[in-house]
Amino acid sequence: MLHRADRLLRCFLLLLGVVGGLVVGGPTAAAQTHDETAEATPHGRCLTFVVASETERKKLSAELQGASAASNFDGSRPFLPFSIPSRNNHFLIHYTQTGADAVSKVDNNANGIPDYIDSVDFYMEYAWQIEIEEYGFQAPPPDNQKSGEGGPDSRLDVYVCNMPSGFYGAAFPETQNQLSDGRVPSFLVVDNDYDPAIYKQTSGIAALKVTTAHEFNHMVQFGYRCAIAPLSTISQKALYEATSVWFERVVHPDVDDYEQYTDAFLEAPQKYGFATNEVDDGVTGYAHMLYLEYLSKQFGKSVVREIWEEFRSRESLSAIDAALRKRSFNLQNSWCQFAEWCYYTGKRTRDTQYFYDAATLNRSRGMRTAATASLSSGAAMASDLLYPLSFGLYRLVIPTENPNVRDTVDYVVTNAKWDIANGAGGPGAKLEEFTLESDAEDRSGFAAITAGQDTVVFYKLTLPHQHFCINPIVNGSKTNFIAVKPSPQPFVADGGNQLVFAVERTDQLIKNIKVWIYSTAATRVRELEQTELQGANNLLGVVWDGRDNAGRLVPTGVYLYEISVNGGTPTLGKVAVIAP
Image (cartoon, rainbow, N blue to C red; front, side, top):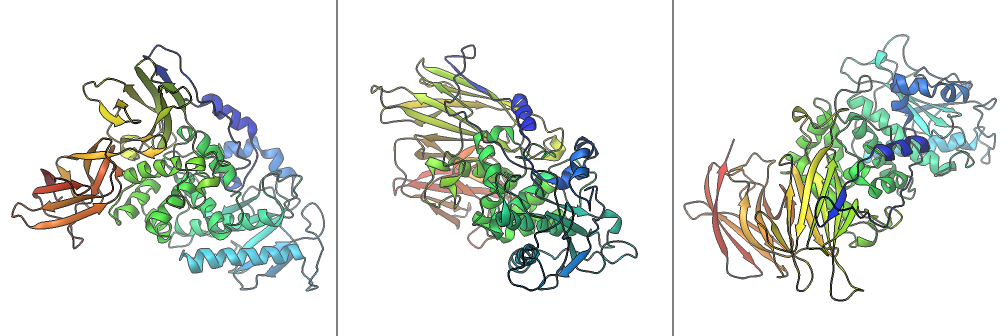
């Protein structure tokens, strides 16, 4: 939608943000913040939802009404004297050559059409080609189905105007023109030149490219579900913006405008929960295009389209969960895994195992720590607050005999709660407190980590509910393990839940881990083999989706298992399974 530099809002959000302190030696000691504190400032946000909000519209009234002679950007269609059909006849492009909205008259190919309008034509059709023909989204609905409503014909209308300062474009749904099948027609507006004196982050043709991809995707979205006014109780706005920014990257991977959002997000991911209805900070939603990038790399590009197909009939987070359950996964576990992907960015990047452009994210700095403490006094505690569907990075520094060498444990803590019925989502999504304790001595209820050649650290996470997960990472690498017991017990095998054959940390390097699952009749029903451990249900281990080797959910019963690490002696046990 559109983007705007809003530094005052950003500063206000920084004042509101709650960043926990790691307390050294106990809860009363002073916190040590990480020394890398510079934060990126996003340069824009989307005008579509600004216009949809009466409060925001009034706040920006002078800006919105002072830029263009053709439009007040209030949802009514601009009037422009010239129009041309796009080359594949999907769009009707409106423009003028006089006044504040004038486009340059340069016509180097002498076709009688300004070159800038030729570019609008080309990039609108290119967005159609990628989003509709290649990615399989449904085409936006025509806007001339009701008498007296919409544009002059069934083609999608694109208006080229002088946008308010810093705003890149907007898509306007016409709810009064809604079709009988629920689809809502729309039109869009793009800027008439993207003057680099105004558009500091991305300007000129590069800005036109990503704006056409972004705003066209909003037109597509309104054909699936138009939740503009009111925007219900959950993260609908965030899903709209995440999808449109994701398509900027898909359609034009050569333009990195999206990094203005992801840079700010990776500086302080604990501040930006996805289970909210607000995107006015210019980061929430926009930066969560990274989550869709993670999903598409894990499950294929069709997963985003399937989320929108589910979104027709359910709320946004439920739609994501439903699409993932078809793949024997779910939203909660995906968010815990997504947090790990964000950790391996910047200098922690591991080739292309995670994001394709992981090394350049946040100007090559990657995900930053929320706070840092030292284990020098033998114990440390972190107490922080996380929004539903957010995560933070909490670093523990472990002193060594060599003052020039330090071991670190990075705890990636995720609040993966999303169930609206339990109060997770919506404008009122509340911060929830957790406590993370670390100790050099073994204590009851603590888990052990091998951190360095001769060092063992023990930790415990105290949570408000079971939907948190933690991933401890030693010196930038996943910790090593031996097997213990499965969780949860009993395991409800509904196709979306996951059972984890949990493991304890040890100094043994895992090269191969195998799990064999048997019925009580000693029939082998499933074989699992992997070279590293996965995270789910606040645990790390080998994950089972409750299916047999043929892909069928197993029936209710007690199952036996064997786990072998690096070909060693198997660990034996049993697990109870309930088939709903």
